Length: 400
Image (cartoon, rainbow, N blue to C red; front, side, top):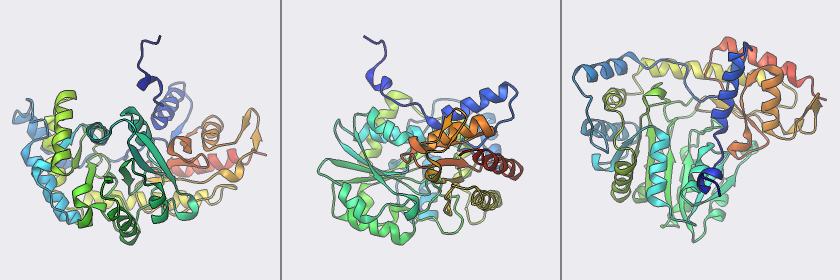
């Protein structure tokens, strides 16, 4: 009998963290590895936010904060949701957590019973299905491909709903694909959900502030779904605050209270200093923030650079991501090809090959629910991106 629980033994390790760890180990050995595996902005936290954190320390905000978060932060989040998304929430409906992952698992622990089905459009962020299985729910994948820009259709959503469906986890802008659903596309999905009043929606909007060719549209804007809508968001991506560990949900009162209960027993409140810094973040109007505009402009330039470069790699099929900082090439045209000890039969095979042969770290698509693809994060310098593309092209040319 194992000393470890079955829930841990059956849980897959995070593919993104595993690849990042392996690339760091190679770098420690003196190998020049370019890491395109991690989903972290390579920008620093804006000064106004850092100053708010420093002021919190000086003003002795170093004691236990309330479990759901300081009132001023929850009020600021409500004001942000009204200003940016046109939706109304009360502070009692906001729960502040230790990052977006913590917010998500709180919701699943609070809502999912054994056997409840949770619909997850694929490609998906690697942790969604593992979290669902951890709380003894059943992940139901709905797969989209590059031909549909990795977006599911209303018919696919309708076909996936059963009497056991409890929740839809929906992510736009998407990790790993970088795709952003339009208002019309969201409306079509909302029309399906209107017919199924027992299905709740968990909208992961963590990449909300990073869009290029189309505006971000919140799933929460449809009033007919308001009583079943949980928004998850945070400070990590749009404000380059990954290490501050700040996420939050806005949810129906009953669900928010349940998450507060779970968090009170498991972790208590998020960092008081990070909370005070996050008040300053929430007060930043994205339409006026120079820091945000500069970051998004840089990401768009990098996206174009990477996309144009990858289009020259034989066997790579790429579309045009419209948000986040990822591109998700389909490499299935190269399946069956070999070089040395390598045979490429999946996105994971390609990722391993490119790490060892090109010294470029990226993530295979298997853990994202699409074994035909690989995920590339372009959250690094243009110089490194150009060199990465050169190395990838050189390595792929060896396959035969």
